[in-house]
Amino acid sequence: MADGFSGGCQCGAVRYRGARLLDDAHVCHCRMCQKAVGNMFVGLVGVALANFTWTRGEPAAFYSSAKVARGFCRNCGTPLFYRDDGGDSISVTIGSLDEPAKVPLVFESGIEGRLAQIDQIDHVENRGALEDDVPDWAAEVKSGNRQHPDHDTDDWRTDQG
Picture 1 (cartoon, rainbow, N blue to C red):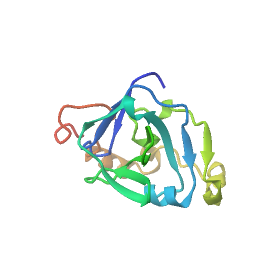
Picture 2: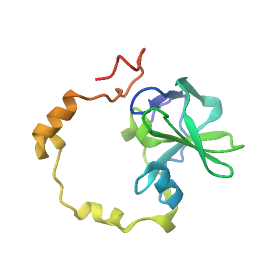
Picture 3: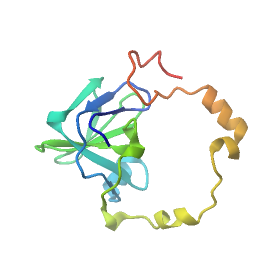
């Protein structure tokens, strides 16, 4: 990813910006990470705290262990970060970046918690885009979209879809 990035939560109440991502983009399969994001794994990438700032709002945090804080939007619940107290970096969730597809993964960790379903993904039925699979439902969801766009805006409440 080129220098300079931004991201935030689903509703737009919390936004962040940074100068440069670290080269540690990864997925973690450990059970603590699974529970933190309510999914089979979490994608994280680090950024030095000196190159990172919250530009709108402040995330809430939950200490999942004695020294690890996991941040999220208190309005919509989007998981936003992992931070080890005393460290000089913060790891943001790759999915909360405005351009997550630009972040190549470097490694995976927490393999002891890796779920067997991960290996099934290439073998399950591919139903294509939502618009093709369930067109009426997809159109209804899209017309009532309240998700914040993947870019910075002046007012998160009025700039929703």
